[in-house]
Length: 235
Image 1 (cartoon, rainbow, N blue to C red):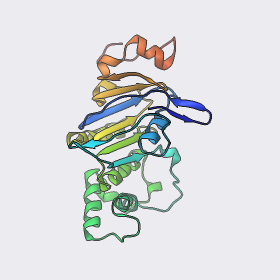
Image 2 (cartoon, one colour):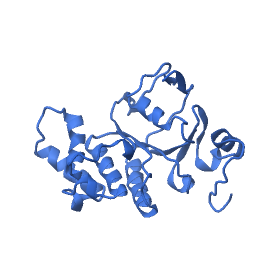
Image 3 (cartoon, one colour):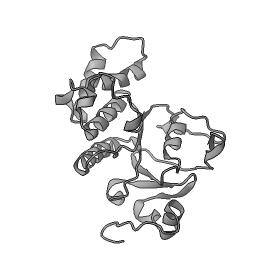
């Protein structure tokens, strides 16, 4: 897949496959094209060349949910956690149909799955960064998405909340969902992700974390000085 906008090539010949039941981290420097990749997969940016194909059970499926960076969300809207999760049902059933009993039951169940039933009436502005991210995951579940794209989900989230978030994502992965999470945080990638996509406008490497982080890949990502990445107690 190649994506161009603003007079420059943002992504060049990006090619990779992700199997069902995979939690994949997408890493790379600022300007590497991580958000562009997600926007293209979600159909929000035109693709100049190439295709994005989603399959489920041998059939093509468009069940995809995109959680953008928190900075792009208008937090001034006076909406509750339940309101946001219900938006996922609206995406699924159509915006002009009133939610029914089944929709409300699904929303309640989704809030319970992400551990926010007790916060269902809280305004989004009253929730922590980690809780907000879990609300958005609940919205994706209400949408019945089989593919989740999370852009910088760890941004503004403390270490404890990050691990709680990873726990929710692992449960969804174990149910057969595909989850792509873009992150700048290189801490414990091997412990968090099944696979890692290293991106710097092109695919530098893709595979298990303990295999892709070679000195050559790190140089492609972060330049000649590279980055010392500690994994499993080794540098």
